[in-house]
Length: 427
Image 1 (cartoon, one colour):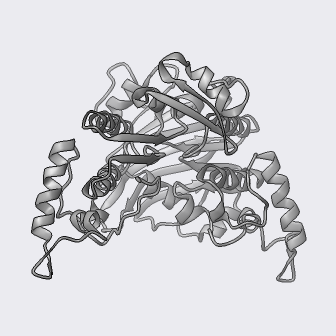
Image 2: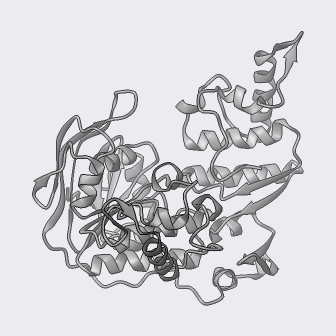
Image 3: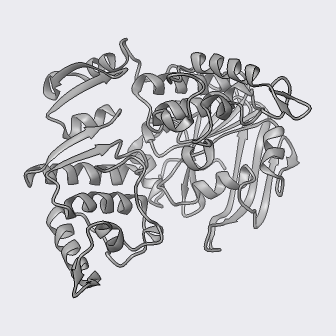
């Protein structure tokens, strides 16, 4: 099985990860050279390019995906299960994965693809079984079903794939970034003299290939990473050097890209997670004593409003599906009514009904006069919700375009470092 969240040891090499648990030995000694030879043969046969000697921590997310696939093939698997395999991939990596799946089928492998994404189902599937709330709804031949048919089976009602919205009415600048430089973990600049403004009453989308400085940019804004130089101002006041809680208290909401690492404490109850930003305030606590009755009722209300499905608000966050975990985080941040809402990968792992709902909520926040900054690898999502799109490449804003005057191909050119002759940057 290829899991949605990769099961890799980052400190190990590609080869060490692939053979883990099925180690090849020679005279009682681990035979890395022999294993690497087998891995290269498998990678060439199935079109899964990897470097067996590379450290997993140093390779791209797409390459890590290929390592996970090779782990199953190395063990001789004939049936491969992919669980939301494109949740962390860029558009080009998704296309590559679809081609890999088709090649695996040609080689006689059977594939079970678990995904919410209708285009991916249509790209590689022969048959599709729709499951809703733990029950099988229907199995159909993919050639005989439209995306609208599948979406209605998934959520039990008709779904709009295009979010209707009025033209934005931007007001004062809420977030102002000037000449920002932020280093990545190795001390090398990941954000390079980047400037960007986000105004009240607009949604600014950030598009770009993973690893071009998006994560470091958001971490700098939210106080999770040191700023080397440049400025970040919130409503005219500098927030550089402030603690994350201080920034939160200045009316900033943050939905992080990695919900397991930064968004939730998985061992704690979902009610406790929903109250993470407000547990130290009344009415959730008084004189340092938590009011669990209030926290539980508060969580229950938000879970109903945002359709967070769980056996109870008292179960651990780890017991929820990825989509429901994401909805819980979004509920927590939006309910605080922040002036600036920063959302990274807002609909990762969500079904089409939940995606429709989240997009509407983001647009409602904009219409309520909030400044919204959205980072997403899903170009359809960026085009759907954004009023302006800032494309980031190599740590810099390559261009700022309007969704009305561009498309995925145009964004792809900018994401690759190119320029659009007729488009003007408006940084």
